[in-house]
Image 1 (cartoon, rainbow, N blue to C red):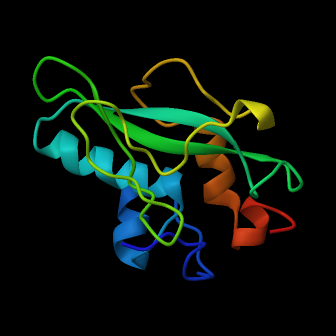
Image 2: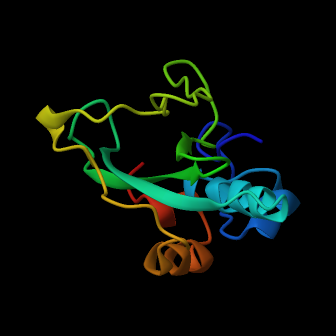
Length: 140
């Protein structure tokens, strides 16, 4: 399921059912879908976040990236449903997380503390009210 930015999608999805219907989504929507699938299989799943730049530097400002955490046995494993492309290579790793984006301290990128049971409501509301990708990330 491709990331909306990677295919220049015109649709903005938010809920898991939206992603299934449209066949695309940004990280938040894709994390919602992955959490729904995992929870339907009775695998505990949560939401995690990073504060990241929108570009290779801080020239376009910042965004919040969403990924998942699962608790299949006795420890948390972090998964990134963003989708890979050139320069983005998230992998399943039961040990150290291999996420789509490493945090770079020189650009004030960081991980939010915690694993959340539900998605951030202000982000969901923004996605649900957005009609196009520029509504989500103006200037991109």
